[in-house]
Image (tube, helix red, strand yellow):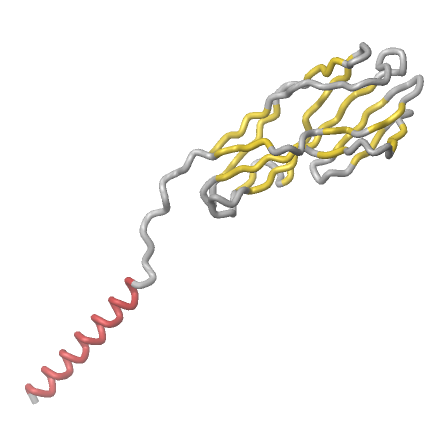
Length: 171
């Protein structure tokens, strides 16, 4: 009888040991320490393409999805001038929460006089977003915007350019 009890406890101990080893195979250590995000501006910058306007003016918008639209008496033209969002590459550990904070509206001076007002729009993915790509693969972030165009006297044809500020916040 003693031998049977002893065998029973040996088998039970062996089974418990196997279960403990099996259980520890699925235990993970702590997540990697936070990695400061890196943001790279690509060659794709915010561009509104070619358009024409009349006596009223209006707005031209590039959505974060890359669609272009206009209000007022603005006519969107397809003359080979591209329109696009600004494309950023964000590299961060998976699971990092990133918020995008747009700076204030800016004035874009024109090459032939006049100026346009630029308002930075929303982002795609929508801010705040959670990164899922594993470094060094970036999360692609598109940001659109809206320019306010006056009449043809206030905004003569030409090139309008400038800079704007965006802040990326890692949470």
